[in-house]
Length: 179
Image (tube, rainbow, N blue to C red; front, side, top):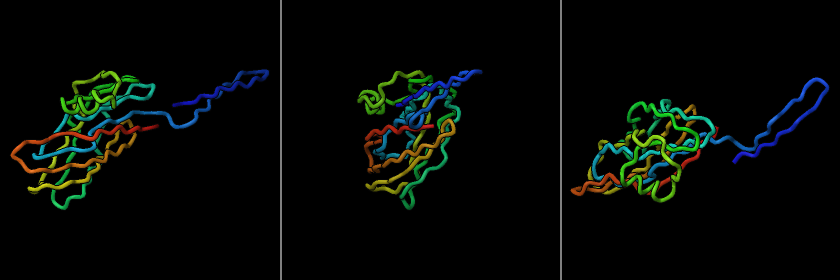
Protein backbone atom coordinates (compact mmCIF):
# COMPACT_ATOMS: atom_id res chain seq x y z
CA UNK A 1 0.00 0.00 0.00
CA UNK A 2 1.36 3.42 -0.93
CA UNK A 3 1.42 6.35 1.45
CA UNK A 4 1.62 9.64 -0.34
CA UNK A 5 2.74 12.89 1.27
CA UNK A 6 2.25 16.03 -0.77
CA UNK A 7 4.09 19.16 0.22
CA UNK A 8 3.90 22.65 -1.22
CA UNK A 9 6.60 25.27 -1.12
CA UNK A 10 5.62 28.83 -1.94
CA UNK A 11 8.00 31.41 -3.29
CA UNK A 12 7.57 34.75 -4.99
CA UNK A 13 8.08 33.17 -8.42
CA UNK A 14 6.66 29.65 -8.33
CA UNK A 15 4.76 26.97 -6.50
CA UNK A 16 6.74 23.72 -6.23
CA UNK A 17 4.99 20.43 -5.46
CA UNK A 18 6.77 17.29 -4.29
CA UNK A 19 5.65 13.75 -3.61
CA UNK A 20 7.20 11.33 -1.11
CA UNK A 21 6.11 7.71 -1.47
CA UNK A 22 6.81 5.28 1.34
CA UNK A 23 7.71 1.78 0.20
CA UNK A 24 8.04 0.23 -3.24
CA UNK A 25 5.39 0.52 -5.92
CA UNK A 26 3.57 -2.70 -6.82
CA UNK A 27 4.16 -4.05 -10.33
CA UNK A 28 2.33 -7.38 -10.59
CA UNK A 29 1.60 -10.63 -8.78
CA UNK A 30 2.12 -14.15 -10.12
CA UNK A 31 -0.16 -16.94 -8.88
CA UNK A 32 0.80 -20.53 -9.66
CA UNK A 33 0.66 -24.10 -8.30
CA UNK A 34 3.70 -24.56 -6.06
CA UNK A 35 3.30 -28.36 -5.98
CA UNK A 36 2.41 -30.87 -8.67
CA UNK A 37 1.80 -34.59 -9.00
CA UNK A 38 3.20 -36.00 -12.27
CA UNK A 39 2.93 -39.55 -13.58
CA UNK A 40 3.60 -38.45 -17.15
CA UNK A 41 6.10 -36.01 -18.59
CA UNK A 42 3.62 -33.37 -19.70
CA UNK A 43 3.67 -30.62 -20.79
CA UNK A 44 1.14 -29.01 -18.50
CA UNK A 45 -0.18 -25.56 -19.24
CA UNK A 46 -3.14 -23.44 -18.20
CA UNK A 47 -1.88 -22.80 -14.67
CA UNK A 48 -0.14 -19.40 -14.44
CA UNK A 49 -2.03 -16.20 -13.53
CA UNK A 50 -0.56 -12.72 -13.69
CA UNK A 51 -2.35 -9.95 -11.78
CA UNK A 52 -1.55 -6.35 -12.67
CA UNK A 53 -1.23 -4.59 -9.30
CA UNK A 54 0.20 -1.38 -10.77
CA UNK A 55 -1.57 1.69 -12.08
CA UNK A 56 -0.30 1.14 -15.66
CA UNK A 57 -1.21 -1.49 -18.29
CA UNK A 58 1.04 -4.60 -18.18
CA UNK A 59 2.25 -5.81 -21.60
CA UNK A 60 2.72 -9.58 -21.45
CA UNK A 61 4.92 -9.79 -24.58
CA UNK A 62 8.00 -9.30 -22.35
CA UNK A 63 7.37 -12.56 -20.45
CA UNK A 64 10.40 -14.88 -20.68
CA UNK A 65 11.88 -17.84 -18.82
CA UNK A 66 15.38 -16.90 -17.68
CA UNK A 67 16.35 -20.17 -15.98
CA UNK A 68 15.05 -23.47 -14.63
CA UNK A 69 16.87 -25.50 -11.99
CA UNK A 70 16.04 -28.73 -10.17
CA UNK A 71 17.67 -31.10 -7.68
CA UNK A 72 17.28 -34.42 -9.52
CA UNK A 73 20.40 -36.08 -11.01
CA UNK A 74 18.74 -37.26 -14.26
CA UNK A 75 15.22 -35.86 -14.54
CA UNK A 76 14.92 -32.38 -15.99
CA UNK A 77 12.18 -29.85 -15.29
CA UNK A 78 11.51 -27.61 -18.27
CA UNK A 79 9.45 -24.45 -18.45
CA UNK A 80 8.67 -22.56 -21.63
CA UNK A 81 6.61 -19.55 -22.52
CA UNK A 82 3.70 -21.18 -24.35
CA UNK A 83 3.64 -18.55 -27.09
CA UNK A 84 4.55 -14.89 -27.22
CA UNK A 85 1.67 -13.47 -25.21
CA UNK A 86 0.07 -10.50 -26.94
CA UNK A 87 -2.20 -9.61 -24.05
CA UNK A 88 -2.09 -6.31 -22.21
CA UNK A 89 -3.51 -6.63 -18.70
CA UNK A 90 -5.19 -3.45 -17.42
CA UNK A 91 -4.54 -2.24 -13.86
CA UNK A 92 -6.38 -4.27 -11.24
CA UNK A 93 -7.11 -7.16 -13.63
CA UNK A 94 -5.75 -10.70 -14.03
CA UNK A 95 -4.72 -12.72 -17.06
CA UNK A 96 -4.01 -16.33 -17.92
CA UNK A 97 -5.79 -19.40 -19.23
CA UNK A 98 -6.56 -21.86 -16.43
CA UNK A 99 -7.38 -25.57 -16.58
CA UNK A 100 -10.30 -26.75 -14.46
CA UNK A 101 -8.04 -27.98 -11.65
CA UNK A 102 -5.99 -24.77 -11.68
CA UNK A 103 -9.14 -22.62 -11.66
CA UNK A 104 -10.42 -24.48 -8.59
CA UNK A 105 -7.02 -24.16 -6.91
CA UNK A 106 -6.48 -20.45 -7.49
CA UNK A 107 -9.73 -18.68 -8.36
CA UNK A 108 -12.45 -20.67 -6.59
CA UNK A 109 -10.26 -20.77 -3.45
CA UNK A 110 -10.07 -16.95 -3.38
CA UNK A 111 -6.31 -16.67 -4.00
CA UNK A 112 -7.05 -14.68 -7.18
CA UNK A 113 -10.27 -12.69 -6.66
CA UNK A 114 -9.53 -10.20 -9.47
CA UNK A 115 -11.55 -10.26 -12.69
CA UNK A 116 -9.80 -11.62 -15.79
CA UNK A 117 -9.18 -9.43 -18.82
CA UNK A 118 -7.41 -12.29 -20.65
CA UNK A 119 -8.55 -15.83 -19.95
CA UNK A 120 -7.63 -17.37 -23.29
CA UNK A 121 -3.81 -17.19 -23.26
CA UNK A 122 -1.73 -19.86 -21.53
CA UNK A 123 1.46 -18.08 -20.51
CA UNK A 124 3.68 -20.96 -19.40
CA UNK A 125 4.13 -24.71 -19.97
CA UNK A 126 5.83 -27.10 -17.55
CA UNK A 127 7.19 -30.56 -18.33
CA UNK A 128 9.42 -33.25 -16.90
CA UNK A 129 11.89 -35.14 -19.10
CA UNK A 130 14.24 -38.08 -18.46
CA UNK A 131 12.35 -38.99 -15.29
CA UNK A 132 13.12 -42.53 -14.12
CA UNK A 133 10.24 -44.68 -12.86
CA UNK A 134 9.47 -44.60 -9.16
CA UNK A 135 8.05 -42.39 -6.47
CA UNK A 136 10.11 -39.35 -5.49
CA UNK A 137 10.04 -35.56 -5.19
CA UNK A 138 11.88 -32.99 -7.28
CA UNK A 139 12.49 -29.48 -5.96
CA UNK A 140 12.68 -26.96 -8.78
CA UNK A 141 12.81 -23.23 -9.37
CA UNK A 142 11.50 -21.48 -12.47
CA UNK A 143 12.84 -17.94 -12.94
CA UNK A 144 10.89 -15.54 -15.11
CA UNK A 145 11.21 -11.95 -16.21
CA UNK A 146 8.27 -9.72 -17.03
CA UNK A 147 8.27 -5.99 -17.68
CA UNK A 148 11.94 -5.84 -16.65
CA UNK A 149 11.25 -7.47 -13.26
CA UNK A 150 12.55 -10.87 -12.14
CA UNK A 151 10.40 -13.37 -10.28
CA UNK A 152 11.34 -16.80 -8.89
CA UNK A 153 8.75 -19.55 -8.67
CA UNK A 154 9.89 -22.40 -6.39
CA UNK A 155 7.91 -25.61 -6.79
CA UNK A 156 7.87 -29.29 -5.92
CA UNK A 157 6.97 -32.08 -8.32
CA UNK A 158 5.80 -35.34 -6.74
CA UNK A 159 6.56 -38.09 -9.26
CA UNK A 160 4.36 -41.19 -9.01
CA UNK A 161 4.17 -44.31 -11.18
CA UNK A 162 1.29 -44.96 -13.64
CA UNK A 163 -0.93 -46.40 -14.97
CA UNK A 164 -3.18 -43.62 -13.64
CA UNK A 165 -2.30 -40.38 -15.40
CA UNK A 166 -1.51 -37.49 -13.06
CA UNK A 167 -0.60 -33.98 -14.15
CA UNK A 168 -2.26 -32.30 -11.22
CA UNK A 169 -1.52 -28.90 -9.66
CA UNK A 170 -1.67 -28.42 -5.88
CA UNK A 171 -0.54 -26.06 -3.11
CA UNK A 172 -1.10 -22.64 -4.61
CA UNK A 173 1.10 -19.58 -4.09
CA UNK A 174 0.92 -15.88 -5.01
CA UNK A 175 4.18 -13.94 -5.37
CA UNK A 176 4.25 -10.12 -5.25
CA UNK A 177 6.65 -8.22 -7.49
CA UNK A 178 7.51 -4.55 -6.94
CA UNK A 179 9.09 -1.80 -9.04
